[in-house]
Amino acid sequence: MERAILELPERRGPTATICPSDAARAVQKGGDDGWRALMEPARRAARRLVAAGEVEITQAGRPVEPAAARGPIRIRRRRRIR
Image (cartoon, rainbow, N blue to C red; front, top):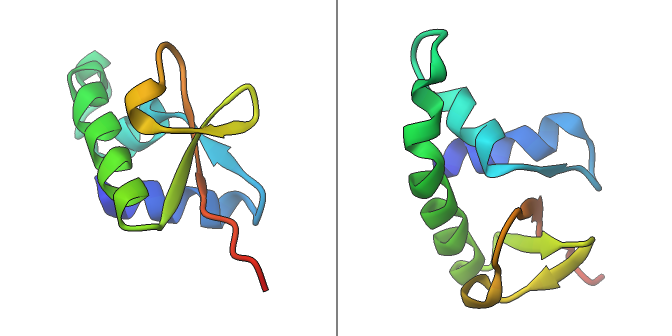
């Protein structure tokens, strides 16, 4: 799941965000709604990647603390300051 979360935004562009459902669909096998069962694992994987400094969780385009996020979230690669 972590790999999908890291790779999907890279393919879409440097400022791209993804929904946890994008990652769930990427790792789900088959064409049914089985990805829905992977939503919470995707959100947990995103929180682990936030802790590792790899991604940010956003709401309304702004980074939020994972514990404070309620409702829909987006995930983006962490922006590095150069």
